[in-house]
Image (cartoon, rainbow, N blue to C red; front, side):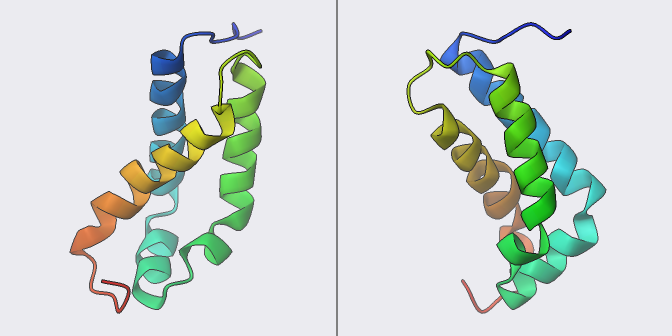
Length: 89
């Protein structure tokens, strides 16, 4: 059984790793989602599964722990996709 992370910095690092894996294994969905502004629709199941995995590994004592995963999605998936041509930027 994996240990529970109780350090916010380590929790954010874990969130980024999970989101990085989602982006890596779903590159075509990320590209299409950015291009058509449907990223969260296309990756809904994968992101939900990732969030559940993240929350299961993180101490409930970490404040705003759900926001750490959301920040990781923006940092890893959205910001790094800025090179993809899209009407959203």
